[in-house]
Amino acid sequence: MKKIAFTILLTAVSLAVMAQKPEVFSTKDGAIRGYDPVSYFTDSVPQKGKAEFTVDYKSAKWHFVSTKNAELFKADPEKYIPQFGGYCAFGMSRGYKAETQPDAWTIADGKLYLNYNTKVREEWNKKQAELISKAAANWVTVKTQ
Image (cartoon, rainbow, N blue to C red; front, side, top):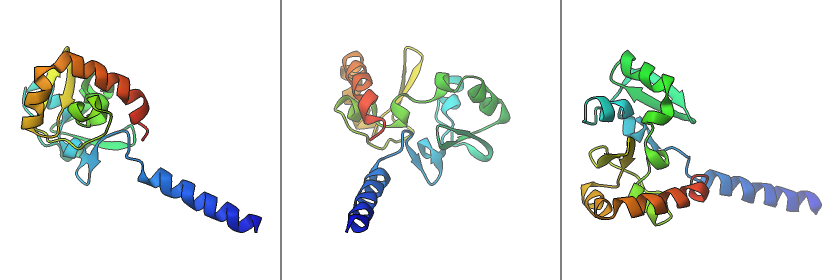
């Protein structure tokens, strides 16, 4: 009987862990849909990265448009990685992870923020400082959920 109860408990824990979203927003194309996080800073435009320029970081595959961008990222990933693991900054301000679109972005105080879409970004930008503060407070617990 104890063996059955232990098996049930182990299965329940395993399912709960598998249901958690990873710390970095990724799709089959890689982290942040395969877009180069460095390009937001250097070119002021999102650019799709290439598989030949890939860096593994925080259990995700980050793609870059060039060796130069990959090297910049490797030298200081926290400078380029989007806040809240690339999940929607507005959603995080409300305490949940939501996917993002590459064209719904903002750089504020040298940090990259992504949003669910451009309409959500417009709303987020209206109270950006307040929502960044709320999102940062929520991220502490939500990032591992």
